[in-house]
Length: 363
Ligand code: DAH
Image 1 (tube, rainbow, N blue to C red):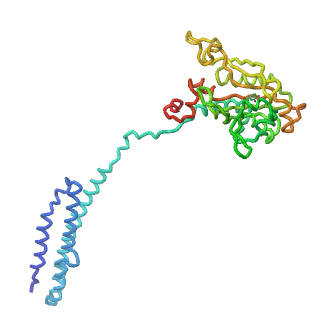
Image 2: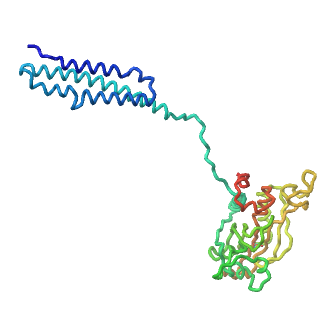
Image 3: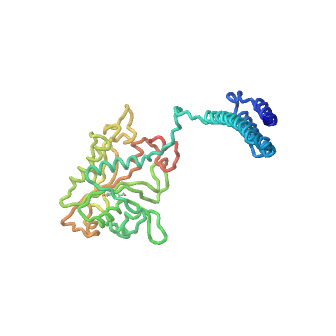
């Protein structure tokens, strides 16, 4: 006797109707919400037709109610429909999911050809730019760069530099004091002493760094500024070496036609002492540029830069160096005025106000 497959076929017919109502063909043009909705419906059908509580699962329980010789055929008929339904559902769900994936990929697409946003990079401060240029020149001449402390004792700022207590030179370099006997250095000349104590002689160094003085800020004064100290000590060093060295580095910084001039002066830590000027880098010493009085040199043709001289025997003695064997020269100058002239800055206070609009001009 043939088995009765009517209930199995009924399930299949109902499924065909349900899956027919699911407009799977439209999925290729569906939006993300539409595709998501289709997927939900397909999953619902999956639960309804293939789950443990599906009608087919219910029919499976009726296998035992069949005549023994029909049981196998009945079970196989259910399994065949189950395979068919599962196959259709798996394909359908796969199709919808692939549509959802491609919608997402499309939405997240990155155009790698769009120009990027350039990150803002920092740049050097005008004082640093100038300091590095000067350092490069001195390094190329065999000098070492010395860096040292800004908080000093009276000994290093004054005594060891042949400026004993009560010396008038202390007055002109009033600085900022801490309550425990230290002070902010008023000159980088302190590094002459520090470096000779550390390295001994012969020595060739420059020491760029910050110095402090009790000054009221104005266009040409700030209480913190920068100096570069130079020191060369060896056997047989003369004033000619001083003049040659200063002239050479200024030529390298401002051009080969730069001329220097030394004027007698006084500093406690040098003897003899001289101030040095160099020919104006704008008018080259003529005093006029573009038919007008030259600005950086105020029409004089010369720019005053710093102090210098032959290291005083007392300074050498302070670090245990015999002045009858060794001699040396030293010089020192400020960076702010030089930077102001080089970069055409009319007020040196600008350099320490951290206004980005100002600073960005020197990249
Ligand atoms: N230290 C001096 C000042 O601040 C500048 C100076 C003058 C440095 C003469 C020197 C020098 O090394 O020899 O005014």
